[in-house]
Figure 1: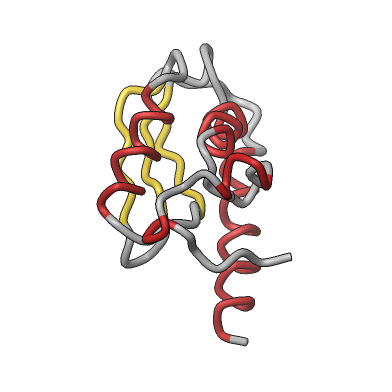
Figure 2: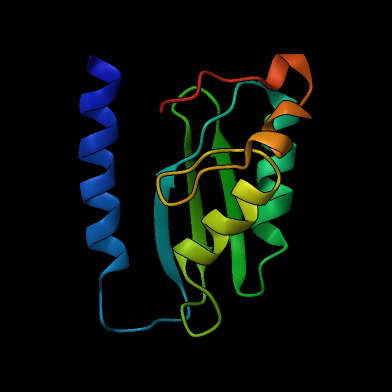
Length: 114
């Protein structure tokens, strides 16, 4: 129950940040990314950095948050979320495909919320 409340509150906070009209070259963005371990951390951060415009990406397994600094004139938080979902990790904005999730190492199989 606590997880659901935290996810809902985080979603509302993140959506407020993403909904800003002004585009900036150094915008701090934070959103939830599911994962468990250091392998997840490397995969998530690599996926984030694959998006043009991402200047900094740090995923924290203990909180399940990714902290980004992005150039909003080149990308958005949703662009980064799509890249992360493409490597098997669910985000607030995008769910990973089952086929990709099922290929993750067994220690990376996080609890998925339907």
